[in-house]
Length: 182
Image (tube, rainbow, N blue to C red; front, side, top):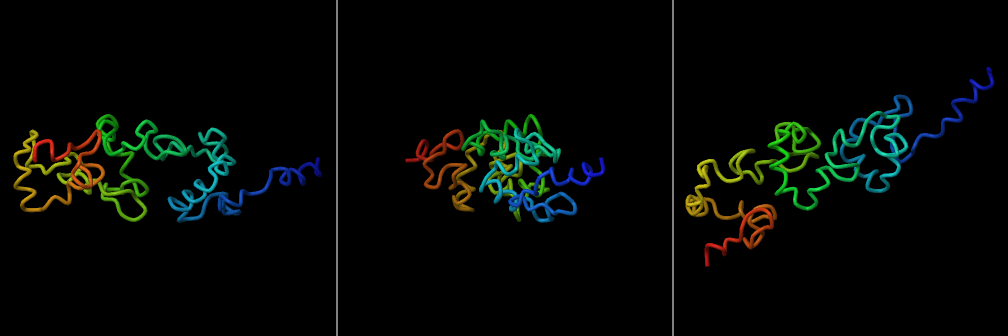
């Protein structure tokens, strides 16, 4: 029995060297999130399965990828969003609120982006997190956009999520300016 107890730890295997685990605590070092785990996962997401489970639902670490990733181990946003996160996030927020987005690793604790977080919500929502157009345009009052453009230029409209880099429109989002303007 004594020999079995001595050999038992040897049979447990080695620490996953790509996972950067602190041998004393059994957890990742501070600063591992988000960049450390992103680098390891991009190199070989299978290395995460050793601790987080073959199905990435927690495993021996008891931390599922979906605690942070709304899609799966490979997708921060819900997988159905694909490349249309800019257009499909509104329905998610209406159903679930912004709590899943408001943290240091997603869009910042106050949804103001920064650091390793994704962009600030106001980068696209110039009227605040609940309004992509200025608040004065409420009730879909697009007649006010002329005054806004004259005062501020069109740079906040020219991006991949609003009206396109050349104002040619964006699928599932803002129309081309040429639809109304020649």
